[in-house]
Image (cartoon, rainbow, N blue to C red; front, side, top):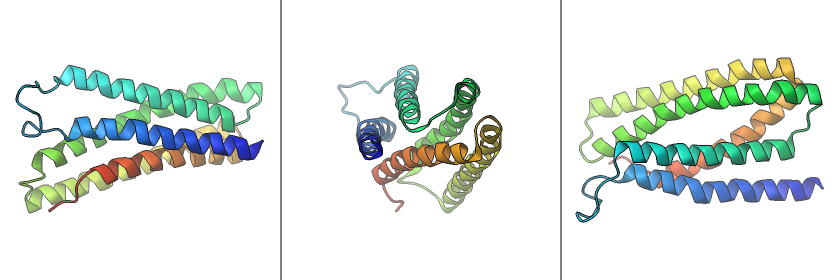
Amino acid sequence: MKRIRLHKYTLLVLGLTVMIAPLAVSVLAQTDEAIPREVAPPDAGSLRAFIELVRSDIRTEKSFVLAQNMTFTEDEAVEFWPLQREYEFELSRLYDRRLALIRDFIKTYDTMTEDQATQLAENSLSLEESRTKLKRQYFSKFAEVITAKKAVRFFQIENQINTAIDLQIAASLPLLK
């Protein structure tokens, strides 16, 4: 049973990564020059709606994977799921910052100065620090409502999914010249 569940989980993560990340990155990577003149660039509202749709799909799939791979008592479930949604909301705020960094990178890719590169690195490192801080904060909160072992399991699953998505995004971005 565990082998089947792990196989389904692996397929789901791979499917999510292959399906979602390239779509998001391709939309972000478009510049005015890359868009054919007969096609209007997406307006900010439409792009934002698309990103929210992708995020919603990812959240739904993550919840499904978690439900399939975590076992909670009824009391744990009642406490865990609202806390998990709160964590996802906080994480999405960090992903908004990452999206802004990617947009800045794409805008300045061809003309980036040393100062801009330094600022990009600082902002990127700050974002990673914030992400680690958020995980520490929520590990403590999760360990109060479920066991520490289950909290570690949650973050293992969370990290596997996020690493797959991060890798796909990183592979889609060009290396700085």
